[in-house]
Image 1: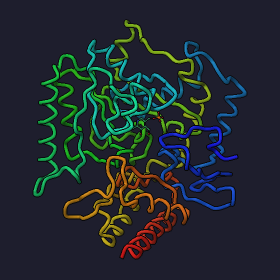
Image 2 (image 1 turned 90 degrees about the horizontal axis):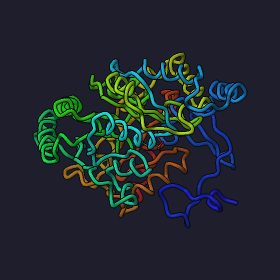
Image 3 (image 1 turned 120 degrees about the horizontal axis):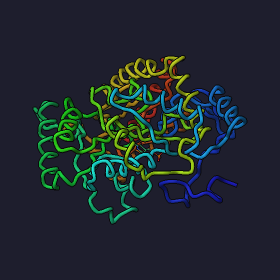
Image 4 (image 1 turned 90 degrees about the vertical axis):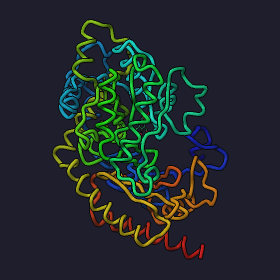
Length: 434
Ligand SMILES: Cc1ncc(COP(=O)(O)O)c(C=O)c1O
């Protein structure tokens, strides 16, 4: 019996799937039924930051299961208040409270509602180059093609072009000039949409699934200023970037900005059990002292999820894993830049912390993507992933960008070993073509 006999699997036609059957996993690696080892160079879905099989999390979860596996969200439990306190303490200084949910999409759904309740406005802005989740509201926030199945969209949801520096920058233009140009366009769009009707503007602090897009110099600060000017809630989606992925606790720290709302999930429990959250500013938290919070979930602040949060936060702290993400990230980026010099098919490499993207182009001059809009006409990305997988390097891609985001426990030797595999596969592909 294979995985697809009874399961429907995300984001693909089912008929020709041959999912790998995995038997066990530990640290950086997982192993298939034949004992073959794979380096997890994407931390699964960029969530398994502490690596596979950490027994400290398993023990904390088990202990909570034995002690108090479930309580309704309106009853107090230490594990939950402790998890909320610890998360808020890591967040920017203006952040005050967390509303717990089960995952990233739900975090964004509830952030939409909270922003609407707080402002009394309805419109929602988000970027075309974004992924915010697959449930109805989150899919409507999402700019890329995964929103199409949820369309026609929710009235009042407006998309804007958020930056892709490598592709957007004009010859001779500086990053600061690009930022100025994009912010001018965004301001015009806000003005055209009746700013007094706009409740929130959503942005991934650094775009993840859509290709590791680091905003140009001054962009996030400029968006923050625009939101403040028009009374729009700035919502930073930190579902993928939160909890050290970019080398800081939250990616907003790179831009020294304070959003009004942040959404979290993945790295809060590293996938050991599901949990997400919406972190809100003091001002928003105060508003809900007198106004009813029209949000609720049976599993909001599930004690087992919160036990995982507490265990994972302790691991990040005691093992200095956020610092490791920063340090190993610098090393990984250096190695990827060396590869770029060798392979003309690599147009750009970029990253912050252990959050790197390798962008493949047909020619460097025109930066023509080798795959785009969900299509891979030459099968380049498919062949690349297959070649990597055969040699025990597991990751995924979005269009022409290979995502490289291993767990923070990766060593420099393991980085060398896996960058060498990428080099080898690219050489083999080039020699087949030539
Ligand atoms: C930035 C971002 N937001 C939201 C989500 C949705 O999270 P989930 O799949 O946990 O619903 C994802 C998932 O990849 C994400 O990367």
